[in-house]
Image 1: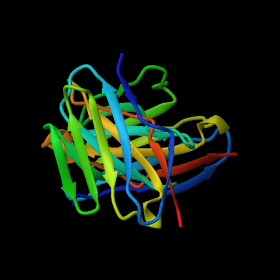
Image 2 (image 1 turned 90 degrees about the horizontal axis):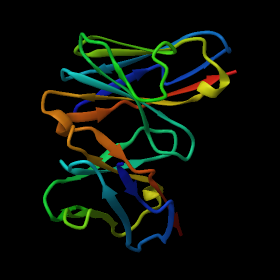
Image 3 (image 1 turned 90 degrees about the vertical axis):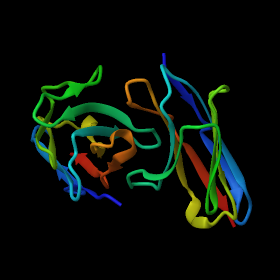
Image 4 (image 1 turned 180 degrees about the vertical axis):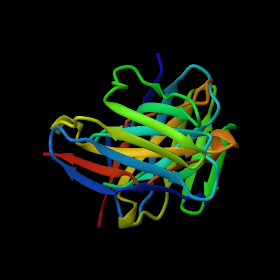
Length: 116
Length: 109
């Protein structure tokens, strides 16, 4: 099946710094990328949806200036957590959707962010 | 509003059968997914139902009743490795995934 990679898989950063997470679709073109956040023992929470070449659409309550999303190509999207705080510590998962739509949607392995 | 309900936690015995239910109320319906998620990992695809009925895939089966807004995931011959969270997700009229909170399945020897 299709593969979506995320990098890094784990990152620890100090409060106030910024962290960039990359999401790549390795063998298909991702017209849409989704970024999720998951807190322990909770389900996935959609943060934003991005289409290649256009601005991301953020869900209510998600600060677009804090969580910068760039979808520069059909195979790469990045999420930058700016001025990170301990409460931003979470599991971040990207999902890439291809031309076939929801039937061609695959998840990355996730990035565990810990802000100290 | 949109709502998906699943039990929070279930416990079953190795070798047995367990059924995880999911009920939904969404704006439109374009299919229902079941995903398995082990702790610290991303969800992995298990099944997709868009028509009523039972879909069988090895030890796992998924059932859908659109008129009742109801689905279940049936796991047979449970193995210890099946201990995980099982997420129900519905595709709404905008082709967005609406996620349930997940059911944590605990398998005991």
